[in-house]
Structure formats: structure tokens, C-alpha cells
Length: 192
Image 1 (cartoon, rainbow, N blue to C red):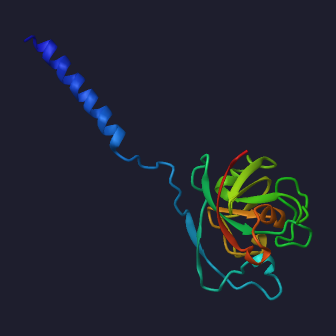
Image 2 (cartoon, rainbow, N blue to C red):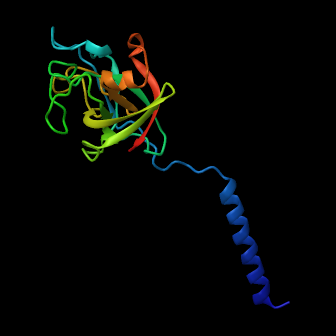
Image 3 (spheres, rainbow, N blue to C red):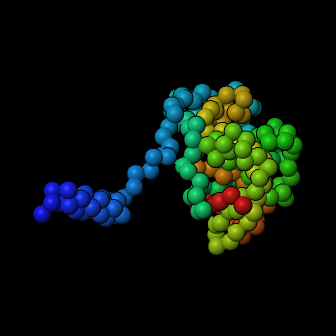
């Protein structure tokens, strides 16, 4: 047998073996999102924290994780839906970041965690939300800040988790969730 022929056969077998191994070994997610740090909460000054719509105030001494990223967006991205009022005088007290406007509770609008908000790249674009056996299309108008919190700039609220979609009352209604349960809901979302 020719040595070149034998080495060619050997390389072919090795190549096929690598292909087979690659098909069955689970892939490691190289886009994993890890905490970028933490902050220690400070109690807000009296009368400065808005508790509307299940919002929370920072707790003195509580450690909060910060995130500059969110898990990768896929066709069905898992998230937690929470409630937010985008109306004047609502939860945030400020206009939406994307266009400096306020939105009524009847508007289908959302805020996305910092990583998904993607430095305003999703501003005024639509996403599809699936939850409670239904689907709704909503416009991204704001960021749910995961990279900071517990100060005046963040309304003395803790940092947003990195898998949060904060939605108006209209989104919750469209998903058919009774208003007594508008707190947190496991959902899937995708770009529209």
C-alpha cells in the first residue's frame, strides 16, 4: 500500500469522525450574558420612589446585579413580562427614551432590558409577544435599565433584570391576562 494513499485514508476517516462528533456534542453558548457588576441599594429619600404598577424601591443594603447585556435574541426569546405605565405621571415620571413622548395606557408599547434595547437600535420598532396562549405586536419606546439603578436618574428603582419586557396595560389586556394578575408573566418575544 502506498504511504500517500494510507495517509489520505487516515485523514478522511479523521475528518468524518470530527464531523460526527460535532453533530452530537452540545454547543456552548458563546453569547452568554453575565453580570457586569453590582450596586448596593440605598433607601430613597421620602416621597421619591413611585410604587405604581408593582414598581419596587431600592432597599438599603440590598445587593443588586447589573447587566450591560441580555441573552441573545432568537425567534422565540424567553422573557418576563412586567407592568409599566408610560403615561404622563406614570411609573417613570419621564417621557419614553426613544422619542421623548408619553404614551397612554391603551397604547401597545414596551420597554426592553438594556441588552435587548441595544443602544436604541430597537427604538420605535415592533416586537411580537407570545404569552397566556395569545400573541400581540407592540412598539419599543423605552429602555428598562439593567446597568444602573437606586438613584434619582433611575427613580430610585432597582436595576431592571436582563430578561425583562415592561409592557403597558394594553399589552397585558391584549394577552388576555386578568388585571388582578398584572405583575409578572413568562413570555416569548421576537422582532416583528
